[in-house]
Image (cartoon, rainbow, N blue to C red; front, side, top):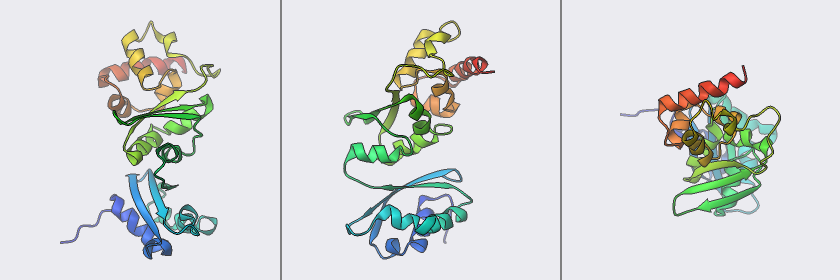
Length: 216
């Protein structure tokens, strides 16, 4: 009995083997594939031949190879990342296209604190928290995002401004994972906020409702 699943990471690996001769021939190794099927994927690749650019080979001339794979997956976005044993560099690449300012790794607890300029935070988190979610799974560590610059962007609002609507301990819990402004919280969906904090779903929904009112 053979079961084929288009949502499996292995299916994506096979597509790379089909479209990229260097992968098929073993010149490029796919180290890890992380997917949110139909939405986005991150693929870490490595070549043991210094003459081969693994990312460039997988993308192809003018994106020809990667576009063929994307079409097969109904326009699922695919980030191809150059694998490295250097954890800081690997995390930086995993969070692309965001530009990281600095990183602190806590291997004992499996957590990473990433510091970015304010205009890079939303890029690191991604739509619905998808970029940071996939990056965390790719590097096998929980990634927390922090704003390097405390100066707020004009259109954003510090969470402390909502102390009348949101209890202090809830605000502190959100800050613990690097969410210190309204928009940084709103960038994540309910499921992701519940997963990354100790907050109940009902509490998260109350928070999001209060924050959304600010921008109506």
